[in-house]
Image (tube, rainbow, N blue to C red):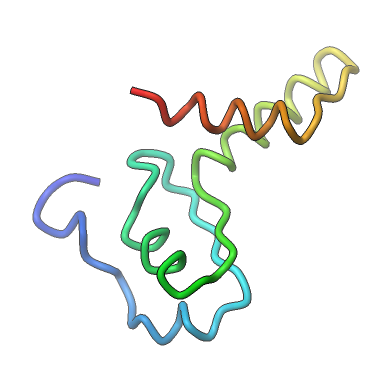
Length: 83
C-alpha cells in the first residue's frame, strides 16, 4: 500500500462502527487504515500479519504433524512486523 491513497479508508467509517470484529488480509504495512480505524472504534482486529502467522502455523502442522501454541503464533506474528 503505497501512494497518495495509502492512508485512505476505502469505505465509510460507519461500516467499522457496525462491525463486531474486523479482519484485514493486507500484511504490509501491518497498520493499515482499516486496522487503525477498527482499533480507534474499539473493535477486535485480526491483522494481515496475524493471518500469515496462522496460515504458517497450519502449514507447519500439516507438514510435521506438530501443533504450535497460540503464544507461538502470536510471537511469529509480532516477529513478522519487525523491521
